Image 1 (cartoon, one colour):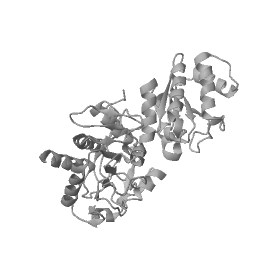
Image 2: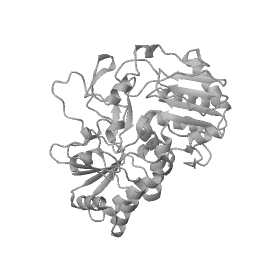
Image 3: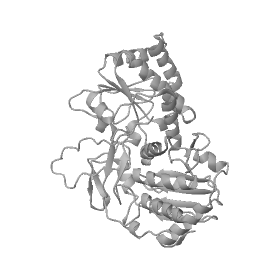
Image 4: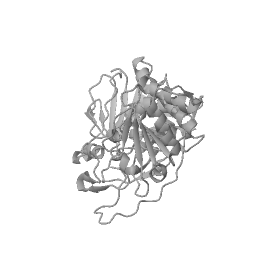
Length: 421
């Protein structure tokens, strides 16, 4: 089962001389909650390149964006009517992108169940890899708080955390606990602690995992003294946190790599303490996956329909597969955090409903196409998102007062129209 918790960590201590109230950033699953924003969404403090890039997508013209039908400006009522007409004719719709918050996911689930739709996410491949590994082998999870307060050894496997999560090492730093970091199968992250080191940076990751498994599970001698020495350090450590990034693993076999890493951690836990932290969950992926699992019992890539059995298939219900095979007759594309384009493989004859960032560029298409600009959680509306470790649900507060509808409100109105029909 996936973790689900609605408990909140204690609020951060006040920062002296702060010029603006603390704000939680929604653009990365670290959900940093110590951000101060200057007026006009500029100059965030502390600085974060990912946050700065995300804020650059917003501007004063967002408030003037209007819905469109077939690239022609219209009003929200007409757009909703056309969207409802598209869904009423669909027999096998796909709800994808799904870059939204918990409330948006809940409302979209009800709408999807009314229409027998398939649910997938913008980062569905990464989610599916992690879900399969969890379903097949289980996992030893840890949290940001536990890494910060307990881990004295950090093992990073095959990734550079700060590349996509700039403040990761800052978030796990502890003044009272000296942390050592070892990078396995990759170079040293530029944001890592000064005492960090790297082993086997050019080795094949599966060879490394196979040798390491043979050592920790069977006690066999291996031709990799670096791994043997690292295992001794792990056994001597108070607590070891294994950090990996699913999207950085070999895409065709990422599940196998995750399973192998989890087997190693489980074997180590027979004699010491260790846990894993997967750096994933971008664009609301963790929040939507958790929400759909609460509501259905299955993770994403599930077809939901009231009155019919649920159908989960991580391979068959992949967005790219469905589009390439021409297996859907309508697409609902949701992208509230960034102006993500429609999938390139979408047939021009498939109707589309786009609930997206106000700066989204909607191309001219042959099939009926409805675009409704929506609020970004944490910018235009409040909301809730799951943090990267899925142990905390963070509340979001709007950073500006722009009257854009939320994904949840649009989905709820479409669901109400269906019930009235």
